[in-house]
Length: 462
Image (cartoon, rainbow, N blue to C red):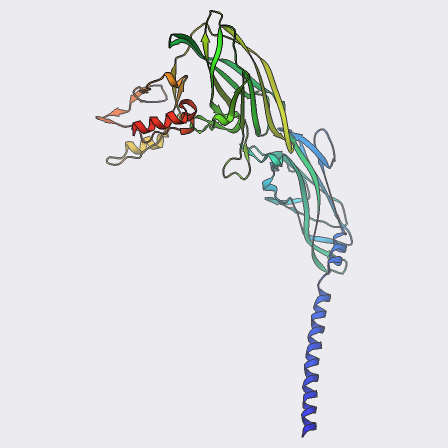
């Protein structure tokens, strides 16, 4: 009885061991069927891939720096397979969307390119019968925004597909290579202009003063092409002579479009952007990434405009003065920054009064209103579509401490057609335009009035 129990246990143990070893054998067989890393590496060694850059001036280099607007740049990728062939080969450029260049499909002329889908190029064949040369023409993207850190990049090329060896075994493999591509600005030159915005004399507490407002405009020469700017610096020597002794200096900006694309009420300029020391005004403005543009910066457009307002104690009739102005612009270029400078002397004659203590200008942000909106309102009897448009009112307050009150009154508004005929907005006893909102930028008023005075001003009005 006891002997039979042991026999049964031995039989069960034998069956279990057989099942275990049987499972291990199957598992081992499965491992043998899967390609090992060293086997894949061996197969990948059967694929040859190399890449170079060529242009109208150089041929087959591994590192190249192009200029903005340069034509005739292309990548040359050589491919070949041995001891087998690659099935459905695809040549890809990873992260192509993040680069500042794109494939110029209008100049594609390669017999081995079957199709292109975004960053993937389908190759017609790849075997040991011939070397495949894929030529990929490229061009700089025409964008308003650029990632400045992509002005120099390592460009990777990856060939991937199913490799079929001499035993007709199919294995998924890939292999890569890279080149370095940089981009330079072209004909970098900045223009600087300075002139008198306004000048006049006045008497305060039995003393005679002269107020002069100097404008400095800085922009890009029309033949220059550059990438986004990092920062702009201006050193302005405050003009003076024995008869004109500076008493106060303030600085404001109407536009920083050249540096960071901001104009009008969007301009962010305060006391952190300038200082006055030892007779010199130092101005600095930084660029910053555009919101929702993934670390991209706006390219320069328009011009920066800075207003330096100086009050002088006036004691004579010699009113001609000079100033030394120097500018330095740091721009992104070929993966780093580059400086361009401009310096010179400006002459001013303050003997001719010009401008006024307070001046203003009204400009239209939208120059036209769609005909569709006008027709839609014309055809409606009871309801109307509101079509919004924006007026930009630029108020220039030269010296806030002697201004008691400011009233701005606009003239009657008109619609103007293509023949320059005017039509009043007041029609059928109803004014068809109205003010929806009026906004003032506190930062700008702080800069003119001073934060304490502006707070009191708002408090009194409320």
